[in-house]
Length: 411
Image 1: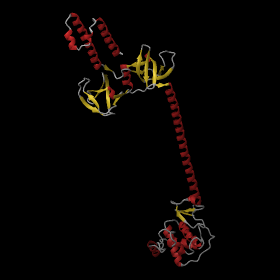
Image 2: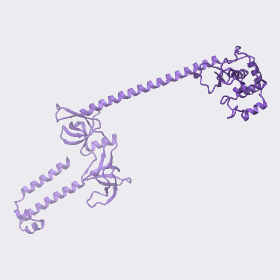
Image 3: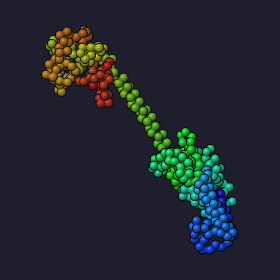
């Protein structure tokens, strides 16, 4: 506003000067400066030449002033200074329609300004706001320096950086698009930026975009859309929170169910764990001394580290298999069956080297022989089960019936 009024004053002064001048012949006004000087011979002509030179000087001085005119970064800007919002109206009247709002620290371009109303443009919002509700220029920049940060970036490739704002200024650098610079102020056609060493550099201001650190105002439609989005976001947040809570509750319940299932299985295993229950319905069997020896060795092989009840159980598993139509009907057939007793036989169905050593050395305890003889006499502590597995690898839910003796599950 100052620049415009100053220019008007200068041009108005020139108009007054021209009105006071004597009327010049057409030939003089059409002549060059050198020709004009040659025609000046009378006092009147000398006065006219003086007026022309004065006019030229005033115009040149004004151009120099424009070139060196300093402006703050927020020149022509306004910032809302109320904690609530500033109503923006369609026309500069209290009764005019509200077309939007400038919220606290929203920024706007000043289009027109009078004592009471200021016409602004902020994003998609154009209208009139109360001048008293806004701060301008240096005051707006002071607010920005307290509330946010002002940044700038180069928007054109190979942007020249000058040492000063003079016409013959030296190019001291070239910046790519996107380069960040620290803005200081405007001076004529340039923006002054601070270099890393705190020296000042100059860039044509059309090549730089300033981020003032403040948001634009909102039209009524934009405000309603923002409110609707905020409500939707809040609803989504609440739902996500509820879903997370439900998922956590489901996880806790699933964990509790798993623990309950595990405890039920543990109780079932405890109930089926036998310290040695006699089943006396199995008839006795007639076997050879070699069969007894092989059985005693396999009992030692599978359960030598178990209790006597565990050894008796393994002996009865062998005899139950002999009686079962699903297995060979001899002790040797059962013991040397493929993939039945781990490591006992080789691929050809013959005793493995390690089991052959056991056969040669015999069972390591008398309990193994005693368990075989008692099983042969009809003492059965595993009912009609034909299989067993270590408790660490047992899948209890897959067995219709089972019992646990020591470290083995029989089923």
